[in-house]
Length: 598
Image (cartoon, rainbow, N blue to C red; front, side):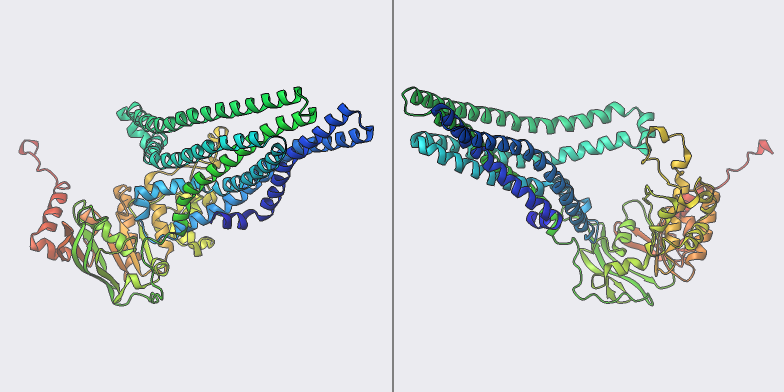
């Protein structure tokens, strides 16, 4: 996969880098032999032309030695930029291919995704490792051949000393890859605490409750755990590589002493000594480069496996090979004996729910926290599939429908709506990208949501950025660079997104007025009531007064349907709904006026 990413992103630059690598592997050998020729020619009194030619060759080789690293650095940067672009595109295309939410709620997947993000640049490192291997082979081959001409025994000793270096580097590479996986949960936890310390919404409670030291302590604790694991690897690497460096120095020193003795005895010329010195240094440099290239490539491949697993892994929910068309809802949506839990280790959230949502009617979902209301919403949007049972759209299982087409037929306002760092128009337009360039439709949706006057009054109207995140310190006093909205104003922006999906068949409203004052809540619910008239709607709210006009109200308890009916029917039944409604209504009753006050 790494080779395919390189081929897609930077084939030309990689080819050029390969040629640079070949040249940089050959130049040291050429330089060493040219130096030998110069020294021997000067020592023997050879013709000036011979000395001049070899000297000119040395000058050209020196120029190449000076320029090639700079060119190589430029090419690796170019490869890195282009390949990272392709890799990021492929990685997040794969993440976006996931149908539901299970992967993003799985800590193991999030750790792998973090490593995969880091691994997006690894194809470049693999290219460097591969060409480093080629360069190492050229250096070692050329200098070993040169050294073998002078001393086969010394050549064997140098090669033998490379064996423990090779084995140790491979072991270190495997350990580094394991530690990267080990520290993932600690680094992720550290990021959570760091994010809290930077979050403006969290800052209110953090300041009020004095949580700064507590959260910073937690953040540093996780950092220290990760640092300890990394430090242990670094110390082992220091000891091993230090020992290997001593071994290399001993072998090189022995070779140098042999060359000096041989030259003193007249067995080698001055040029031969220069070849021995260059060969000893070159062989060790080449072997180190070769070993490090193999070890680095091995480590990068181990880590790049995380990228490959995500990029080539299956989607989290099965997709129909030949999906049925999603036709406009005519009869209704049925939940048939639906059981669900988020994993096999967790308890059941839904326990055999049988429920019918008639087309064109509004159904309210009521229940205590944990009763399963939000889970039903997630199942209707097919963020998850039932563990048992089925959900049918006019009799067709949702699993047999095209999931993208299904979601285009659903409009929703979630309780945990998003506040995007985009303009006001874009924040509304994301509700229906097909209509995002139609300003009239955006304004119409904003009017329905009651947020048009707010947006129109912004410095740039609908083109005003609803964030301050993109600007520096000098921009902070200039409201024209971006503004922040209140929670209630953001709630209306989220409502406008839902209104922009005028063609939807199913409207899901999950606490759509939780951030609004009583007047705004009354206004919004009147608008929603008119908007959902004749539409299939699911209303989720803890405020029973906001769903009392639903065509049917369903009470969930312990993952089951406890009771259902109209508001009047449920009050008459005197069950769980009547008790919940009575408790909420008590809070709005006026206390009797004391007689002495009359």
